Image 1: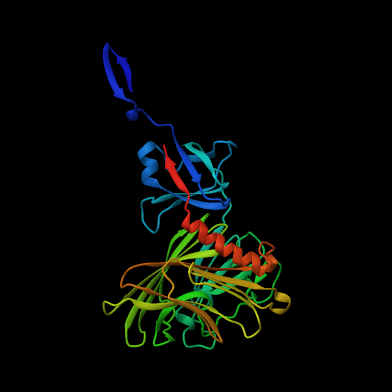
Image 2: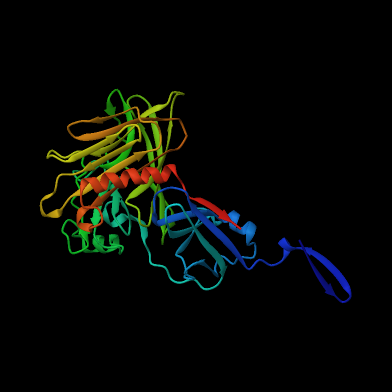
Length: 376
């Protein structure tokens, strides 16, 4: 189809695609039998530009075609200067398609639902959270002290507001002041789903992270990198970079690790969850790569649920006296991706082991059956 325009007696014939585009249409198709609620969807910015080249990245809105209301969004940079992706948070019912469109306009101020930061005032902690749960890990300043810990720590919460800064400022986060607390014990373990090399039936812990970088920071997704110095992993020199991503609405982090090491053979690694002395409920699914744990109730503090989902083949899963481990392997300088996270019964969303294990199974199914994105 062509467009004909006459100016000063001269006729121009212009292809339609060269005319100014005023909007772009986005179709999000859910072919699975699962409802997707508060899901953060990633749309390549290059694809949007190809259909809406005149878009002003500082002056546009995303609209739900059915409700005509604005949809929360974020421009994802992945630590780069140029925009990499458009993120939107939406609900998509099972076996249905959601239609959105982008047009010029002033976006609303969206609620911050994820946050991450380096915490130098607390011995180089790195802490991050979303509207469901919070986590932290430990840095250089705490190494070789009695407070040192090797795994991922969980900060339970029962508010959708961001709490990290408030808790550090108060300095009393081991007591619940109404929004949750830190009662999770990590110690000499992988905590809530950290990964480490595993050689000669031994976990080869690294030191704590020594470098960090925030790549994106809300309102819908926070992503950061932690860099670990070279260490001796049972006779093999290993270096690691961990990229952790937490989306709004999710109980689980997406963790991408890159290990650099000597030799051509794959490096055995484990994802681990600390096991309590008291009786809890364990669910292990080697075929699906799902490891779930409903901890024993911690007095009046409630119950923490922890889980990990591997996307690489699991050799086997082990339950020891102090940890549950899922064994897999990684190639030199190739990323390995898995998911780990937690929930708290007092938050009121997941209140028993059956619900937690179902959450993990559903999460894995969503990984296996991704949404289909089309831009026109």
